[in-house]
Image (cartoon, rainbow, N blue to C red; front, side):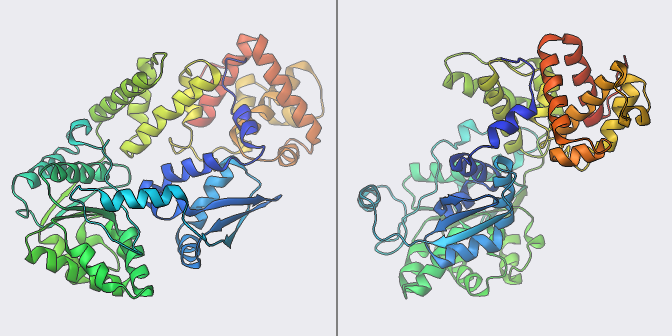
Length: 474
């Protein structure tokens, strides 16, 4: 096996038949487990054609909700695994009956003696509390210390901080803290309801359609602790906001604790009633900042420890790679963990941990190195400078050895660093035939297997193209 990473190899793996399980995992990772469980999990794969997919959902309402909010993101994720797909069609296939598993799960839920609020009969039983997200495994740093300590304070005096409002960007640990609070309250036999704003909306609409608003009100007002995640998704839905406002007041009046998370401060919420924003602002409002360098390092080390507990063979990240991830990936905790997972996946496929240059390619999209920045003209310019030839010489029809190898190198780098098709690449190299492009790519891949100097040159050029790193030319 070639020990040097090739993006072309990964593209080949992705370009065959579409693996819907991988798409589902990516949707859950990119859009979050709450949105996935509430909506995207209901999508089933039906058929694949040349440039479009047919997917199924159980109801028109779910189809309309998904297409209005998530269709572009779903298509973007699908294109990661199948670039030719340009369109998605949904077919509505209603579930005729519950599976035995679903029936057993429903019966178990209703008989469960834990003090968790639940909706009976036609309401969907749903408890989002994750037992793996606890205070004990929340990784603490300067950026999240205030939110962490305030979360602990809610345990000391129920409804003293009411409502308690946590806000931060995506993947910063808001949901982890809400889970932790919910788990602690369950330990002291409090009735806990943990739900996303989207799930609240779904239940609300379903209750109206089935004429069961009385049950809906009882369900959400008969709880000691109400935790609502991603409240920003309640925007613009006046009838639901009206019901939420009255539920909010009823819980406050009976001394229940309300804990809310969002991606922005209360006064920045868009299309949310002013009286609701005022209620949020009247409680304790804390934010979680982007993770600082020390926290990012702790997260990486913790994730590696967890993976070493899971895998039989110990995984060792070099200090260079850990420092690189800690320095370059700063947006969120979720992206840092995603970066570690990608490197582990690489090591499992290629039976080796990537070096620093390969790591930069594996994490290319997380490092905001968009293809818009990598143009064919840029690649040609840097390759010509590296090999000390002119662009006219590279693009000429001459077949001198000192010109052919740089030309093939530039074609190879264009193929692995951009999404241009073979004919498009051929046109940019003086209208060369696509078979010439294929030959050039295969030649460089073959040379990389036997010539260490070629590997070094390719890596140096990649770093120049992607990171503007200065390297010594040959």
